[in-house]
Length: 136
Image (cartoon, rainbow, N blue to C red; front, side):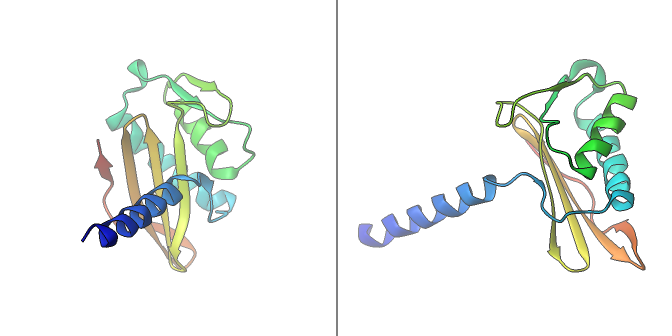
């Protein structure tokens, strides 16, 4: 029985670590859609992480449309956004990807909490395809 469990545990560990290895705009979302996603993401973040009590550390070295738009929205909402080096602990991490040709997915994580939402594309416009899901 143990000889079957060990490869299973190893496989699960590798799969979970592989899922954590990438951050950023993997879908290469163009600016108009990136701004729409950033506005919606910042609005959801205000509910989970209040601006007055949540300083955010962000790796702004990444020249990327979604992150630039998100940082601008967060600053507009009153967040203290501090630049940090890549890989700093407790920094805001995010992934924007395309699980399917007709969908974008946004995932934001600050500390142990994360938010995630799916968006569909119809006629070039982005529309929420799910509610925000929160994981503590």
